[in-house]
Amino acid sequence: MAKNNNNDKMSREERGRMGGKATSQNYGSEFYQEIGRKGGKATSENHNQDFYQEIGRKGGEATAGSHNSEFYQEIGKKGGESTSESHDKNFYQEIGRKGGNARNNNN
Image (tube, rainbow, N blue to C red; front, top):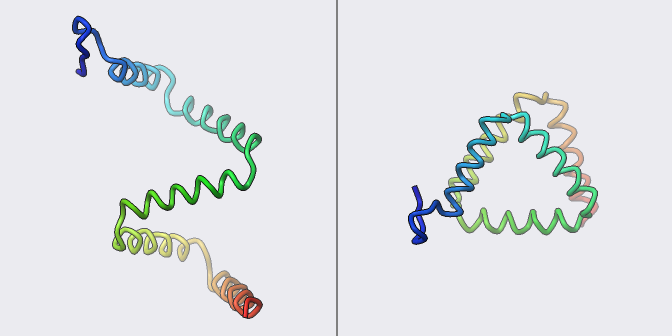
Protein backbone atom coordinates (compact mmCIF):
# COMPACT_ATOMS: atom_id res chain seq x y z
CA MET A 1 0.00 0.00 0.00
CA ALA A 2 1.33 3.46 -0.90
CA LYS A 3 1.78 5.61 2.20
CA ASN A 4 2.66 9.23 2.58
CA ASN A 5 4.63 10.75 5.44
CA ASN A 6 1.52 12.06 7.22
CA ASN A 7 1.23 9.64 10.16
CA ASP A 8 0.94 6.61 7.87
CA LYS A 9 -2.34 7.81 6.36
CA MET A 10 -3.33 6.44 3.01
CA SER A 11 -2.06 8.37 -0.03
CA ARG A 12 -4.40 10.04 -2.50
CA GLU A 13 -3.43 7.47 -5.13
CA GLU A 14 -4.27 4.57 -2.82
CA ARG A 15 -7.62 6.10 -1.84
CA GLY A 16 -8.43 6.58 -5.52
CA ARG A 17 -7.49 3.02 -6.40
CA MET A 18 -9.56 1.59 -3.56
CA GLY A 19 -12.51 3.83 -4.42
CA GLY A 20 -12.38 2.77 -8.06
CA LYS A 21 -12.26 -0.87 -7.07
CA ALA A 22 -15.25 -0.48 -4.73
CA THR A 23 -17.24 1.37 -7.41
CA SER A 24 -16.46 -1.37 -9.91
CA GLN A 25 -17.62 -4.06 -7.50
CA ASN A 26 -20.80 -2.16 -6.60
CA TYR A 27 -21.91 -1.10 -10.08
CA GLY A 28 -20.36 -3.51 -12.60
CA SER A 29 -19.38 -3.06 -16.24
CA GLU A 30 -22.79 -1.79 -17.37
CA PHE A 31 -22.30 1.30 -15.19
CA TYR A 32 -19.01 2.13 -16.91
CA GLN A 33 -20.50 1.46 -20.36
CA GLU A 34 -23.36 3.84 -19.66
CA ILE A 35 -21.21 6.68 -18.29
CA GLY A 36 -18.81 6.17 -21.21
CA ARG A 37 -21.69 6.46 -23.67
CA LYS A 38 -22.98 9.61 -21.96
CA GLY A 39 -19.50 11.12 -21.86
CA GLY A 40 -18.92 10.36 -25.53
CA LYS A 41 -22.23 11.93 -26.47
CA ALA A 42 -21.51 15.07 -24.45
CA THR A 43 -18.04 15.35 -25.96
CA SER A 44 -19.39 15.02 -29.49
CA GLU A 45 -21.98 17.73 -28.78
CA ASN A 46 -19.33 20.11 -27.44
CA HIS A 47 -16.54 19.58 -29.98
CA ASN A 48 -16.18 19.74 -33.75
CA GLN A 49 -14.22 17.77 -36.33
CA ASP A 50 -11.04 19.79 -35.66
CA PHE A 51 -11.02 18.59 -32.05
CA TYR A 52 -11.16 14.94 -33.09
CA GLN A 53 -8.51 15.44 -35.77
CA GLU A 54 -6.19 17.03 -33.22
CA ILE A 55 -6.59 14.32 -30.59
CA GLY A 56 -6.18 11.68 -33.31
CA ARG A 57 -2.96 13.33 -34.48
CA LYS A 58 -1.61 13.52 -30.92
CA GLY A 59 -2.54 9.90 -30.26
CA GLY A 60 -0.90 8.79 -33.48
CA GLU A 61 2.30 10.64 -32.62
CA ALA A 62 2.36 9.14 -29.12
CA THR A 63 1.79 5.65 -30.51
CA ALA A 64 4.48 6.09 -33.17
CA GLY A 65 6.91 7.22 -30.48
CA SER A 66 6.38 4.11 -28.38
CA HIS A 67 6.03 1.36 -31.02
CA ASN A 68 8.22 -0.05 -33.76
CA SER A 69 7.47 -1.33 -37.25
CA GLU A 70 6.68 -4.84 -35.98
CA PHE A 71 3.78 -3.39 -33.96
CA TYR A 72 2.28 -1.80 -37.08
CA GLN A 73 2.83 -4.96 -39.11
CA GLU A 74 1.00 -7.00 -36.49
CA ILE A 75 -1.99 -4.69 -36.16
CA GLY A 76 -2.19 -4.39 -39.95
CA LYS A 77 -2.21 -8.17 -40.26
CA LYS A 78 -4.95 -8.49 -37.63
CA GLY A 79 -7.02 -5.76 -39.28
CA GLY A 80 -6.65 -7.36 -42.69
CA GLU A 81 -7.69 -10.76 -41.37
CA SER A 82 -10.69 -9.28 -39.58
CA THR A 83 -11.76 -7.34 -42.67
CA SER A 84 -11.42 -10.37 -44.95
CA GLU A 85 -13.63 -12.41 -42.61
CA SER A 86 -16.46 -9.87 -42.79
CA HIS A 87 -16.27 -8.77 -46.45
CA ASP A 88 -16.49 -10.51 -49.80
CA LYS A 89 -14.79 -10.10 -53.17
CA ASN A 90 -17.18 -7.32 -54.18
CA PHE A 91 -16.05 -5.18 -51.25
CA TYR A 92 -12.42 -5.35 -52.36
CA GLN A 93 -13.36 -4.62 -55.97
CA GLU A 94 -15.30 -1.55 -54.88
CA ILE A 95 -12.59 -0.10 -52.65
CA GLY A 96 -10.03 -0.80 -55.39
CA ARG A 97 -12.18 1.07 -57.89
CA LYS A 98 -12.62 4.01 -55.50
CA GLY A 99 -8.89 4.12 -54.78
CA GLY A 100 -8.05 4.05 -58.48
CA ASN A 101 -10.51 6.86 -59.18
CA ALA A 102 -9.15 8.97 -56.33
CA ARG A 103 -5.59 8.46 -57.57
CA ASN A 104 -6.56 9.45 -61.11
CA ASN A 105 -8.32 12.57 -59.85
CA ASN A 106 -5.22 13.67 -57.91
CA ASN A 107 -2.88 13.45 -60.94
